[in-house]
Image (cartoon, helix red, strand yellow):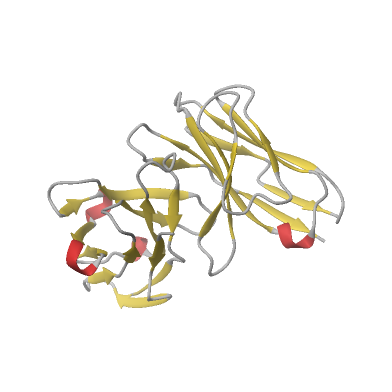
Length: 114
Length: 111
């Protein structure tokens, strides 16, 4: 069965600093990959997705992610973090033929210092 | 366009009581999902539906039932609530491209 690992439970960065959140997946083929963000007390919002093609994908709110097949990774990046980016971030994998089911990582909580 | 709505937002149940959570979407999506979210465990799929009148089990279906009588609504039922079902429940509807749109969640406490 596929799995998704987000090795960092909690990350703290200063406002204006760059950010990278890590995501690794375990699956035989190339899955569809997603990043979602959850603000406190809210549902999840899609940041970006990778299906195929260009391995660097752009998303909303200035985020981007790079798919690296050799490393089974799909890391999320942002060049300059804003205080409003403080939230929990989830990486997810969809397996082809699975009725569009997603397997989620356990999440990374981002704290932004002023 | 309200997207995905969930009713109620909060609920406290006693062990053994029953309740139904309602999810409604106005985007004409075929696929809908129910998840539960517990600290440190991400989201886990309870049940899902690939169209009106169809339902299927997800990763953690025990203790829950679902119904999809209308395309826009997906109901999650707890017949006899247990403290282990204390959680935050999210509904999502899915585009044909696999993008999931989530509701705001229902926070359920079972005492």
